[in-house]
Length: 123
Image 1: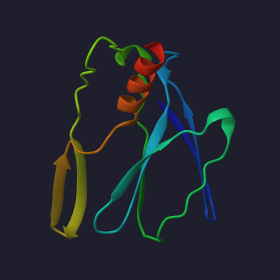
Image 2: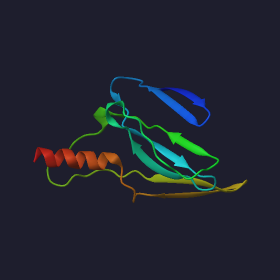
Image 3: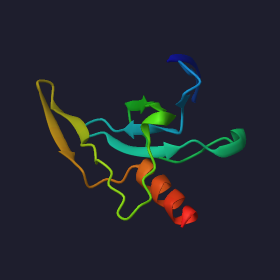
Image 4: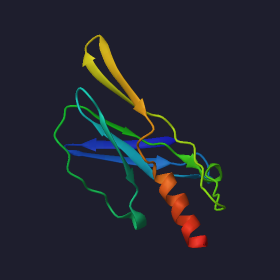
């Protein structure tokens, strides 16, 4: 995926070029913090509307974009919906020579909610 970045003053503009028409960009992960990155998934607004949020001022920020091919997300609407829960990994700097790793499956991904919504709409 190609990314075009334009940073001026207090503004960062990111433009993404999809590698293929099958890839749909649904959102991005915004992480911030100097010792332990706090990450949140931000779904892309519809119809080109701008997204604005307030976060605590920090010296470091991380923006990660993770495209998922649309054919990889399969809808299963018979009985229980079984989705594999990926491990969410958080890496934080403790000292100049050490880091803190934490991981788990307790966070919800936006794909779980969209599949459940589709199943409820289908009956």
